[in-house]
Image: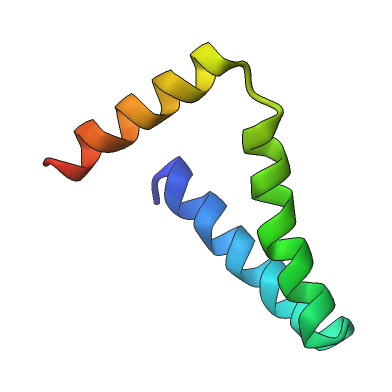
Length: 60
């Protein structure tokens, strides 16, 4: 299994645990808020590089 697949499986597992443990709105807030906060903490040059890499992979 690739590294990205392992991360995705872990993210789904954590999301399911949050949905069981917390109210649905709090779990949703955490699942959307953490990646958003991580993206906003990047430098502008890192954000450009991330967007450019995403577009290249979409064209495959």
